[in-house]
Amino acid sequence: MTALGTSSPPVHTWSAAQLTTALRETGALTGTASVTEAAAEPVGGGLLADTFRLRLRYAGEGTGPATLVAKMPSLDPTAARTAAALSAYEREAVFYRELAPRLAVRTPAFHGTLPGPGGTPPGVLLEDLCGIAVPGDQLGTAPVGRLERARAQLAALQAPSWGDPETAGIPWLHRRTGVPIPAQAERYARSWASVRDRFSPALGPAARRLIERFGQVCSDWAQHLPGPFCLTHHDFRYDNMMFSADRTWVLDWQIVGWGVPLWDLAYLVGSSLDPSRRRRAERDVVRRHAADLAARGVPAVTEEWTWAEYRRLSLAILLVIVPAAGTVISNGRGDAMMLEMLRRGTAQALDLGAEEFLPA
Image 1 (spheres, one colour):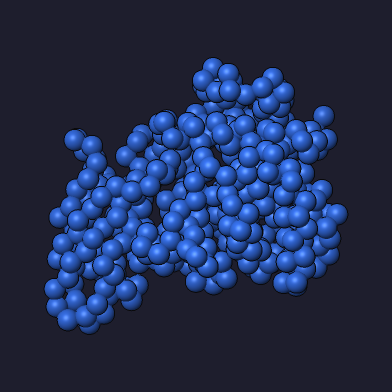
Image 2 (cartoon, rainbow, N blue to C red):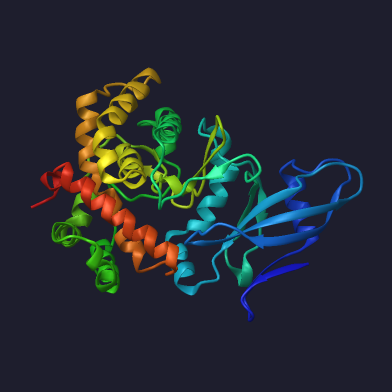
């Protein structure tokens, strides 16, 4: 019924019957109503997926959502290969279907899946929040109030799963820490080599030295990060959230996993604030997070431990962004975002003396 994408196959397609089935199976469609038409327009600027807003029309008695967001596997070959290596599309679908209903963190409502183009993994149908919320902008700097609301959502994600063996045993959760990752350092080095000439002029000598030194030991660093462990978003940044006047939604669960808690907090603060604002705010943010976790029943969390782990995990931005820079869609906003995150992330790690935690 609807097709969007390039002028040659594969393209994104979906039918009225597929949309009707998905909505009915997830309870979003009532009575005898069925989808008759879906007008689609591209939205967002995701680097691993193609996202559309669908405006739906129905026949029959009953109700269904007027609009949906369809997040589909990317048609860009580089992005698709990266997502396939991470099982990103499959993981996000199973997250929304199986894990999100059990969590206190707020996410868009899940309305089913759609087949991906050309036999690729499925895309997800999600609640359209655009009428009630606005997205964060990674190229800006997060207002303090929004940063605090995001931090509170993070505590709601972490506390119930903290050290929980049942959650740890979920097989599809992504592991980036505490386990060996084959060829991790090689991928980091290869990606940095592909973007170094493009990015280096905007980074100072100390930042470039840190990126290259960390690349030599990143695999050892990640494998031997100390626990405890909990649910980890792994890309918990301002772009991946939406905000209304009083609510916050967390998006993009493609690499949700089992990891070290301060990864997400250090990543959020370091990537969301320009360095001068981050230096003024981060002690208070870490203090509130430690207090929030303790209030939610997490044992043995002290401000001193949380601050030390925050310093250690300030290197997480490099471990995400450097490998991604050479393996996802290259476009104007994507490159600008990655460069800004590298600028902020290297400043954060250098300010906090994170090199202290690097293996010899």
